[in-house]
Image 1 (cartoon, helix red, strand yellow):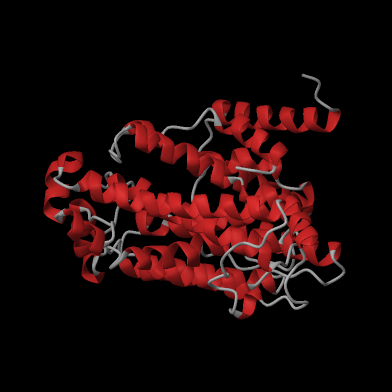
Image 2: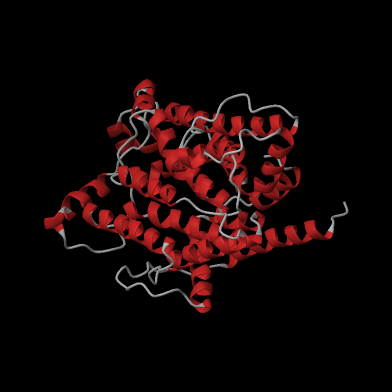
Amino acid sequence: MYITPPRARLLHSVWKLGRLQCLSQRSYSTPSYSIPDPIGASEAEVKSAKDYCSGLLQKFDSPSYTLLAFIPRPSRPAYLALRAFNIETSRIADVASTSIVASMRLQFWRDNINRAFASRPPKQPVSILLAHALEDLDKRTQGRGKMSKSWFMRIIAEREKYMDNRPYHTLESLEKYAENTYSTLLYLTLQALPMGSVTTDHVASHVGKTAGIIAVLRGVPLVAFPPPSDHHSNSSSLGGALDAQRRTQGSVTLPLDVMAKAGVRDEDVLRKGPEAEGLRDAVFEVATRASDHLITARQMLKNVYSGQDFGHDFEHGEEEEHQYGGGSSKSTQQKQEIEKAFGIFLPAVAMELWLNKLQKLDFDVFREELRRREWKLPWKAYFAYRRRMF
């Protein structure tokens, strides 16, 4: 099959990224939280920040690193900064020694976001790269392109709400968590293109909800049986002893209504692990909801390509951040918007691969295979990108 030069270059980029993932063995230390903020950042600092964020993705979010090849080059610094921000904030619950330390780190990120938007980031790699991306977006769009600071704050607030690994009361509350974290992360990535469109936001909402639900499913074994802490804390008077006990005992984060319906008890999961009665039924129901959002997003793309409307209203369309003016997009414009933004939706490919693997393993979320890198992802993503369909 003949491949045109642009496609060949893209395919080479995908191969190169996959190769780097296999070879990379570097470790990245947690940055200092006490260095004062400088005025601006040098080119060397920005380059170092890019390297740090790339390394963070390779280590903790390899699918996002693989999919970097499909993001337009001018928007890649913003993509790296956003994904690194997501990793840093999501890991606070795992690395903080006490709940007080966790709250302090979240406040640190609130301050970081405010400083980045003020073009005065602290000497912290993610913050430096984010500030650089914000300034670059402003220059590329002559001041018309913006990223919403309120969406960053929404992600932090939602992370804080579940910082103690409490279970979700209902499946709908899990969906809300996914919307306020992973969907919001995609909205910010779209703004970095720049792309301000209810059409693309609507697709991103469903893709993000799938991602958030899967993230919780993937974390079930790790939260139920947390690994030994890699840090020392002598702050028992500040709640360290209680936090250590919670981490040792673990918790089950599946929605309570789903667990009750399947007859799953926390103590059974913590004693028996994957052999707990009803656990696979509960995982099946949660995974089905994730799959439903993926199927909905796919059908929305098909409708746009065939000149139809989405078939349902955007649940969050009335929120202020989604008000772009100009009314609803015409069919041709919607198709152009989807094609321009399609690289942002490619996490759906990784999620479909994971859900298919979970189904083959009979919904045993404890299986080690579910935490291995997916070697098919670069090629599946490449062909999905060519077809503009996942």
